Amino acid sequence: MKRPDSDEYFLKIASVVAERSTCRRHHVGAVAVRDKHILATGYNGAASGLKDCLELGCLRDEQDIPSGTRHEVCRGIHAEQNVIIQASLHGVSLEGSTIYCTHTPCILCAKMLVNARIDRYVSFGEYSDNQFASLFREAGIEVDIKKRPPSEISYLD
Image 1: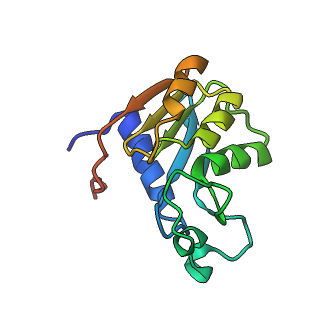
Image 2 (image 1 turned 90 degrees about the vertical axis):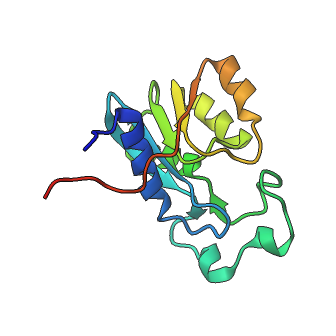
């Protein structure tokens, strides 16, 4: 049995977080980590307490809006936005943290993460555009694209 390194471990956790998504297009999960400790998690879906796309259907599909465009036409809040919101609700700064996410960020989330002062972004999946890359480069945020971690969970009984 191989023990996963920290990046694989937190990417696997982000994948489990993504299972809570209520989006019909993409399940995305994010985990904010500092000093190998989880600060907050987030997944994409409707605002808390409101009806979601699983119940009401997808506005973007109904209007034939391609992925990566017209972010304002959506019930969902992105996983990265939710990880920032969850951290702030609990009084936790994300400064100096690493965000592990199942997809690279859209440009809107990238701007928010720059202002949250994260140090690093780790992902295995790619969003439909890569506008974040030059912004992160300019802000000095390290980006690591890893292999998708195995979905199996290994443990000894």
